[in-house]
Image (cartoon, rainbow, N blue to C red; front, side, top):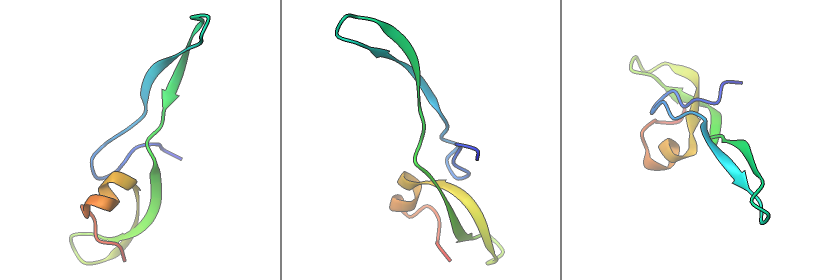
Length: 63
């Protein structure tokens, strides 16, 4: 499953875990992407992968 929002394009971000002993390892922050049924421009119901921030902001209309 792709971890990218189809509305805003938000995708994985990269960072580092740093322990108390300052051991540094790489890590990935994934966006909260949900597979939802939404209306497209032609008023048809399609499935899309949308982040929860776009859902909460009302950028898509759920079917």
